[in-house]
Image (cartoon, rainbow, N blue to C red; front, top):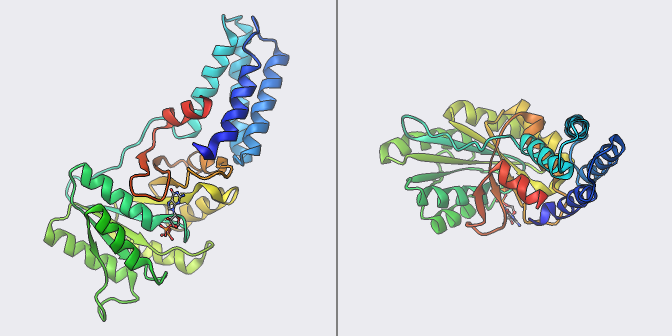
Amino acid sequence: MATFGSLSDRLTQALANLRNKGRLSPADVDSTVREIRRALLEADVNLDVVKQFTGRIRERALEASASQALNPAQQVVQIVNEELVGILGGQQRRLEFAKRPPTVIMLAGLQGAGKTTLAGKLARWLVKEGHRPLLVAADLQRPNAVTQLQVVGEQAGAAVFAPEPGNGVGNPVRVAKDSMRFATDKQYDVVVIDTAGRLGVDADMMKQAADIRKATDPDEVLFVIDAMIGQDAVTTARAFQDGVDFTGVVLTKLDGDARGGAALSVASVTGRPILFASTGERLEDFEPFYPDRMASRILD
Ligand code: GDP
């Protein structure tokens, strides 16, 4: 994945330097940990996360070196892999479906994060999994958002609930609420609510998202974050956690070239799991997120 290309190269290089060592000295451990630290910081991984991560690796690698284990390089690779899985959230967390349909999934995040695109991706994926999703156009901020949702809905083979002229126009909370009744009446089993973002964190946007959350009582609130926004990812995530709170994270634009390390920090900083990853503009560029697979890809 391009986003983690240079992080991946640097980590692999740091670990490759250990390969020919029969034993590891504490100095070897220290220099490897220093390289890992530099690689993570250069990739924009959050400083607190880097400190915890490298602290644990150092401790465990020193233990491995003291035990004079065979093949210390392999042991350290294993340790780094396990710790990387840890900061990415540990076990895979699947989407939670309600016991009684419809399952309500609300999307939240800044403008441009990829929410509307994600609504289409989720719809396509849900249809494939045998569900009958309804997409709800509660982003009434961006002039094109309703049409854009209708386009992706059609591509995905999913219905779209949008405000009728004169009925709920300009009132996204009302639209979201009305969609609940519509979904129950028409027996849609999953409702995906697209909400408005702003270019930066904004009190009105946050209140609107919180109001939609209150009105629809979602089973999942997915915070959508552009992996390319760098260090802002962590502050934005914290602001959304305080303002709306969310049950899971979706990383978008993992196909980009930017240093995506900040996005890697979001699960660790917020304590919320990453559920999905978006890797392109097409609806099929989307997959459930597996922390262990991502860690292996990074260390590949
Ligand atoms: P929203 O404002 O949060 O609803 O964001 P949009 O869904 O409109 O997406 C903003 C832009 O990012 C659009 O041009 C999308 O095509 C693009 N986009 C969304 N997801 C991805 C992704 O995973 N990779 C890339 N390269 N572009 C994406």
